[in-house]
Length: 193
Image 1 (cartoon, rainbow, N blue to C red):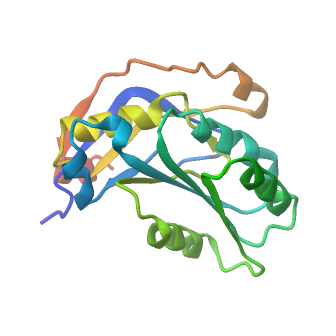
Image 2 (cartoon, one colour):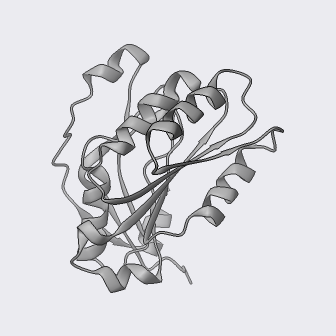
């Protein structure tokens, strides 16, 4: 029926998003995740950040990931041939943090190709795609990993979405909690849309 066994939603925190964003934090659990149950600090997390002409948000997005408190973290920036200063900003970020890896395209091949490349590039225990105009509140990735540890058969974890305007970004609380936790089957999750 539905390949997704279950989902955990509305974790003890929410994702903070810049204007117009609609993608919530999604973390995929692969086979290795079951082997690290109970060892949050040892879990590896890849955060892929596809970007096109959002240089003005890119640094803030990456900084929100860098301060998540995940020891084994990779930040994968995929720039889709931006015509603004995105590539320059991405290079500056990568030069100061060895956890940041880059794929800077010279030709725009579309957003879906960048998302697919991000999925193929990821090799961690847990994975998320975070659009470059989005930000994560402090601790949200730790809470996601912890939710997977409590529910090892889960395939997806996500938090609530908060839409903000540019001037509101500085007003986002570091810890936006607690919203509660819900464990649902894959079928129920898909029917909710």
